[in-house]
Length: 355
Image (cartoon, rainbow, N blue to C red; front, side):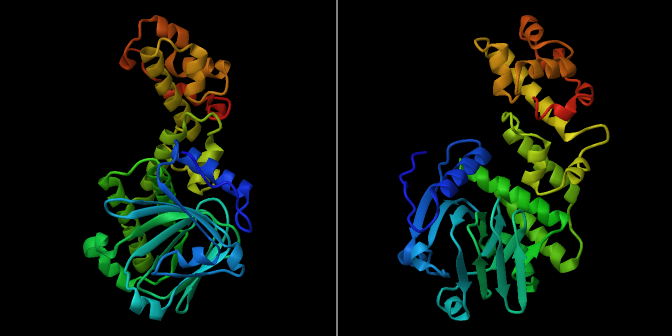
């Protein structure tokens, strides 16, 4: 994607913007295709939309970079902003009515606090926050922050829209379900920057938000949160296994859980490092069969192994033969040389780091 923005006087630094783009494209797994808007200064605050009031201690230094994508059931967004305050006042609600739910996750930096009525929530990276545009609120970012999230029309909740009338807004949760929902939404938004999501995936986002609100209202989740977190882990592995820097620590950080909590999501005898290694070997087998022009070294690099030695070792541990021997066998089908993930367990500790 060609970016025309080159200077940020009084606003975001070049380093902030470059780092944000690198993280977006790394997380999305490709060049960004969503439309970007740049809003700056006093005019930029006015341009944030008729349904919110935006102000800042330094109006001339205000700057907001925003990627947004309208999808079938909801809108997804990712932004980088200088310190600001966003408000929905009673008068504005009367003049510009909206019943949308705004669901946000601070992706990697910053801290925000939201107040509405007698409630106030303060949250940092990885924490889920939900506010309703039908209720007055004030959201304050004290420093440079990088929220991403979704805007869900109330009608998209269907029969569950009644939850909004009983929910306490603003809401910020730290339960297993809220963490899993935050992780899933983060992955969903990053992927939506590259391509539109199908309606079933959008419906899953809406259902997760609904279940999170239900849990807050009743005190008990209606879904298996551990299963949901494992699905989120699998999706992150699928998107990032090709990156040699992607390891167990990265996975735990992306999911906003501790390493110990991450390991609890996997079955007995299985580790996240081994799952990453097996997925890399699966892709390596495909390339060895379908891309004979690629050297064994190139295949290893393409699937995320840091060195040829690490690739050969992991491949042999899991398949029982070397990559070269597998290729010489005549591009056998995967079933002919079964994957043996149990053999990866003993060497899996470095499978995601050394390859």
